[in-house]
Image (cartoon, rainbow, N blue to C red; front, side, top):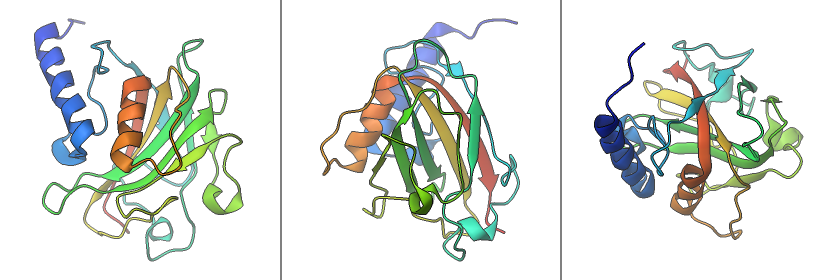
Length: 192
């Protein structure tokens, strides 16, 4: 299999890093592109869920019409021993109305490979921290726009993230981007 041209990847990585800083997540980059901000190729993480399927609708129970909270997620392929923590970012890719971040959870123990349904209510993984969403709320902010695609992205980080309690969404996403060494994503299309 051939290698992509470095100059094209470097250009895309620079563009995606700028996107992460300005929170224009709808550009197709998500939080990061194929390279880290330092130009290193990112490893891939496999992301799955017993309740979600790639390119299938998001069950209404995980939307603002439901009461299930966050869906359960599982992941594998986190690079070891480089990974020191894991982060999850849930966002949508609505370029017309503006992208929204619905959940940020970081400082998950690197040995963790799954989170359960509604962990915001039932108990976060020990040591993990929730960051603010686009609404300013801390915690899972259920998606509401029925025609949007929702991305559940898991990031392997080379360090824990140290932020003050009042850190902004853009500060939080930038710190995650700066420490990312691998990522994986599960994308749902629309809400049931």
